[in-house]
Length: 530
Image (cartoon, rainbow, N blue to C red; front, side):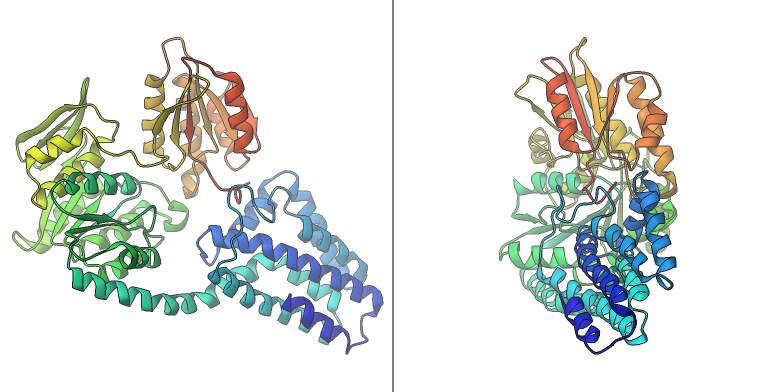
């Protein structure tokens, strides 16, 4: 709105450009307002990361067949606008309506006008207004307003950069309040990170501890600075014995900052994988960022099935020596002389051993052994008896949308793994699908593929589709983001269905499957993805 007001004001005091140029400029300004809503929504859904709007703009305009020629038309209109201002109308129409497929309101992730988004929108409007003002004052209104319309994603990203210090300053008071509350209540803090398995392990830890002590766990995915401060301020009460915190990161320094005011007594790293590789670039950098959680912890729990975490455990021992930092090595593969806790999956369920003694087994529970091993190690470290641990293992909670099984009204099994986007978890889910259908039952995998895997995304999605074909199962591909890779990997082994949206996939499954069949919904991406 401020963009439009500013432009009209300038328009009223200048005569340059002619009425045709003014009309084209006004059209570009209107298109800018519509485009701004679209890219503000993307920024919100991507947690206001500074490059998010531009990254997704490149995905939509450069990688989808209907949008690429449309983008070329818009660029041609911009190039010609200096000589023929009326050609600026072409980019205006493109910006107002496109990219095709990316809606203003959103189907799965609608825009929410929160206080933070309103702040971002105001800063963005000022930047766009400044661009329009330059255009009218210099006499090149059509060209510059047209360029400003096409630059909306970049200016949204710039607004994210400019508002980041403001948001951090506003959050400081909540972090300070949370720090004071942690000091007053003085619970033991269990901090959990990892490329995947964080949320499930958090639930397992809270469950195993809650029979012996008062436990508060951070809700949902409140795993960043603002979210954890809110979790402490709203949920941590006097008398709490343990606070279990899930900690996520998009880069180095973030977990270290969290641990500076929420110092962990026990720190856990569940796994290392290519999740968010698009941002980290290498898995070695992921290890470095995740390992920040260990620096101030008195006890470290590491899944040494991954050689990188095994090496990290050795480095912790070497750096701190015995007595200063306790390092617990856990495994989901089997016993090794150096492993303190291991959980293996036998024919009748999970078998659990800790410090050379059998804790429980076999336990029939749908859970990844490595995550269970982490939780058992934490519970024993905090004083829960082996008997109590064994008693509670059979009722481990299932995190919502993480390989959650249920029976559909149509009589087929639904495995909901829509909050998973990593190769290891996808393989485990595919194995679960194999046992979910009857011998003659039909198996179907519905997926948009895995995202944020950086340079490995195409390769990992091809590999997963090939595993689906070998399982064997039919494949339903949602959207365009990974369509080519999934189609190539699946080949001609079975039934391949391509749909634009998840609701179309759900309708197809309900029509095609019946009693004895099973479907796996593997990952789900919001509709800012093509």
